[in-house]
Image 1 (cartoon, rainbow, N blue to C red):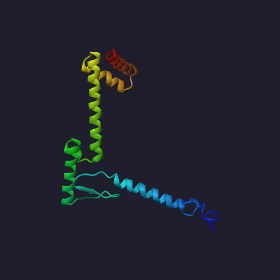
Image 2: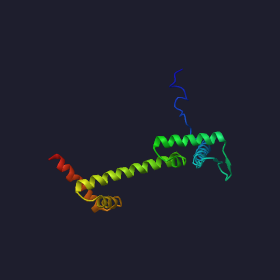
Image 3: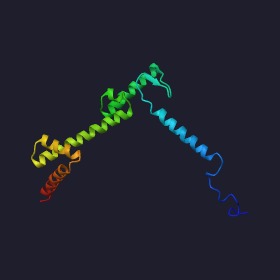
Image 4: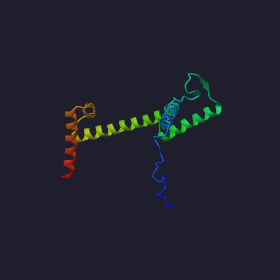
Length: 154
């Protein structure tokens, strides 16, 4: 007897037509959503929030010490204040990303001011207008950058 002659050879591994399959999928999706909601509870040092209730209970001294050390490590690694690191991973990462964007903008402003021979305030205003969607300001910055590239190639 060969496999090709078997009636089970072509049966799919996942059978959507089985009774109860849709209910099973709905249950898995609901459990995943509930798990995600539980993970989204905001962490505050020294307090444990229970899912689905407004009760708060103090955490143990060991757990509080662990959370404090974790916040200190996060602050050292990301080079941010401990107060920001205590607010959680996502808040810390968001502050680092925001700081990076600010530094990059300042660098572009300095480069524009130096290249165009304008003041830092004028360059800052030009970039702010460009970020707000002013097409003329964007074109001005583009021209300044192109003139810089043109000078470098000559």
